[in-house]
Image (cartoon, rainbow, N blue to C red; front, top):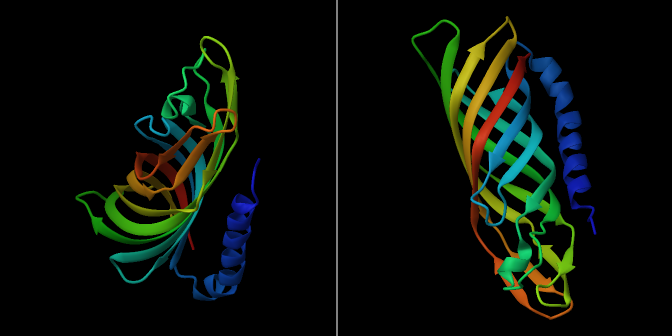
Length: 217
């Protein structure tokens, strides 16, 4: 069953942006960037392969080289790969559990010039929290019987970093292309309601590409 945690994070980010709006309008002068982005990220298959989604980020320029960013990223649907295998249950077929993932993070970003009028580079480091809601997975056991697996996941702490390129495509518009890596400190408790078998997933990594379009104001 879905929890209210993802909605809580979305409302929290909305309040942050609304609260910052008067300051953003007053500052102006290119101090801020608002970015929408697509997230093409994944993992090794334990616990997931693909975590596709989207995000929004706001960056504030601190000086000519450094920016501070707040990121909100959401995956509306991703697969927890074959939870029955973690409990040593021999399933008749490969059945995944389906979940949603919502992350709120803060980063410090260093930008630097390249030998180009339209391209520049950046790297960033940060930390955040991640909320996951996971559906149950049920199916038939090879040789007879059934299983019904539930997964309880605490809020994760995340360390993240990235490196990428910025492409100037207009007076106030910039394309953003980033390679990203995240370390998730997780606590996944997995249990089959029928047999009582239990399992855990702790730390795991996510990596991939974020492609965005930024507006400076």
